[in-house]
Amino acid sequence: MTDGHDDEDRWARLARATDALASGADFAARVQAAVQREPARRSTWMAATLCALGAVAALTMVFAERAETSLDTDALAAVAHVEIVP
Amino acid sequence: MAAGDRDAFTVVVEHTQARLFRLSARLVGDAAEAEDVLQEAYLKAFRGLSEGDVPAEIEAWLYRVVTNGALDALRRRAVRRAVPDPEPALGALPAVNATEAHAALAELNAWLADLPPEQRAALVLSALEGASNAEAARALGVSVGALEQLLVRARATLRKRRDRHD
Image 1 (cartoon, chains in turn green, orange):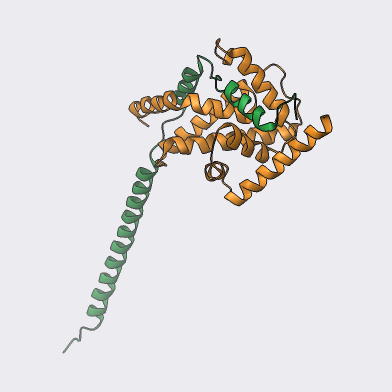
Image 2: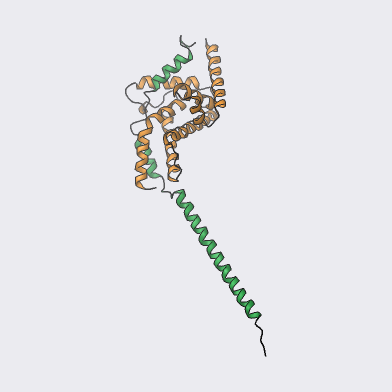
């Protein structure tokens, strides 16, 4: 027991008393100022989309290059198999 | 993030700060430190939101962010082994009931000072915030069973100390 009250009474009293707690009058302005100082960020979904687009573009270039190489090889093979009939 | 989003976030702050400040103050037991914890929680939330991490229930999410921030502050305090500030910032309290609220916060801080941060937070959420065991467990990121253990240990510690003083 504490001063004739048990813990439950003490909790109830402290809960009532601390209900009156409030932040300082300038707190919201302080938070707003801190938020304003935050650097602008690109949304994750936008970053992810851009990354995906970049990857697609890179893959497209690689496949295009391979396709071109493959075409050249085929063309060379075709030339190599041309039989010259005297 | 666009200016409109910052304005929208300001509305979130205005709408939630009374409840969250009370939570923060009760958890850390000091009005000035509670403001620091809450401001950091809001900034963390703002960063999360601006990166597209938008929770379904923003107030419940903020409640968890503040609880975690307060826990971190209590852990840092435990490491520092600092003596609680006997004069929490009165300027952070309203004029009406300021003295009573200030005295109650100081009493709460002294009463719970010896408890490990997790036990202290569990008790504050349960006994002062009126959270159910499930809500308190969610806020602390533990199972309901673990929360019940924290409450049992915390109450036992307070009871032992009370018995020593009687």
